[in-house]
Image (cartoon, rainbow, N blue to C red; front, side):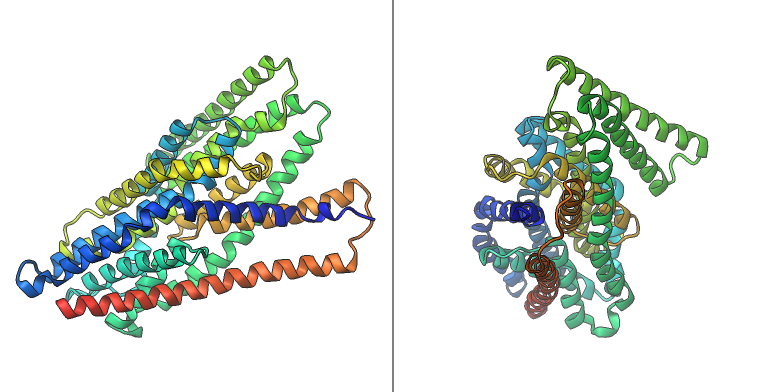
Length: 468
């Protein structure tokens, strides 16, 4: 009779992700306590035109900036453990250095690779209105998203900041300009990306796990095998990132120079990782556990996931602010919106993010290092791929998709390698029910988020309309 514990790999990892989300809600409590005084202050600002103190565009810009900062800090605090938890738990990075590096990686991702996503949110979802209506729409979207994220956190339910902002932009656009102003084909492409991203991540994570388990985990000499394959994976990933950035910005234009830069980056990643593994193996006398061997690669993939989050979720926060700033002052450089959103996220990473990583790091229910490495790497690659197309996808959603693929693969692998009997019918039914439950929960959360954030944004638009 098979041991039922072997059938619960997927559930265990999903429970750990749920624990991380719960820790994120606890870690951001100090930030959420600021929402009431912040809203009172913004209400006073919104009423200032009635007293002749400010103009309507000035009010919209002030409240938009405040909501952007709030969303950025909350995002940085709640999401940092997804990237930083595994390498800190493996002692590959210290807390302070890890937080600083992830904050810098998010800033770099927003500036270098977030432009397409920001453009999609700022002008690709709602028709730009030259009469100033865009000012109110984008300010209302930021206020509505901030209120919705806070409400859902208070209710102790999972929420995606990215999807909240998309829903808020749609809601404010509908009441401000009508259904004809919504770019429905773009919305359909975004929703299709939300569906496809977890599936692609599951496939990539499964292939990567199969490679590393087959070539490293089950190798006769695990240390020697890791010395070959881990540097290769890191080198290929770094080379792909450099090629991605060079194509994204078309710099430099010389193809051979771009190829040389890509090859140099890959070689540098391979050599640095190989030398780090050599030092670990020599220090332990030739026998090192896989958890220790994965320390350096985990640190690298943490930075890559921070970069991917900057290119997607940070860029989404900057989208409404870009539309707002462009409407108030057409010559405004949109990069300033990205920088402000990235700096707000960095503040959330560096201050309350420390508390969250500590809470997750003290837990005995941390993600397995190898599965965390595969899921984070696959999720980062997937998120960056969609970001290049201007389609915002949630990094956390991609990670969950990767864990689904890994869990299914691990269960199949264990039965195959240990020649176990087929799963009992009741176990097969339980697993199908589990997958359907998570799928329906995910789809339901998307629908509720789009509707809820859109409703709050519509109410915020009406409030801004009353004062200007």
